[in-house]
Length: 100
Image (cartoon, rainbow, N blue to C red):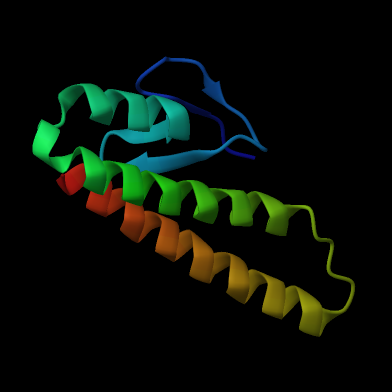
C-alpha cells in the first residue's frame, strides 16, 4: 500500500483516517479544513461549513465501504464501482473547497 504524508502537519496519512488529495498532495481532513478556515474570506465561511460537512460524510462513507468484505466476484465488482463513485464525489467536493 502506498504511503503518504499530510502536507499540512507532515505526519503520515494512515489507512482508516479521513484524508483527501489536492494538487499539493495528501492531506488529513481536519488539517485541510483547519488550514482553509484560517485562510478563507469571512464571507465564504458558511460555504466552507457546508462543503466540509459534505466531504466529511463522503469520507466516512468511504471508510465504511472499506470495512465491507465482498465475497463473490459480482459483489467485488459492485463494491469497487460504489467505492469509485464516492471517491469521485469526495474529489469534487475537495475541489469546491480548494476553490473557495
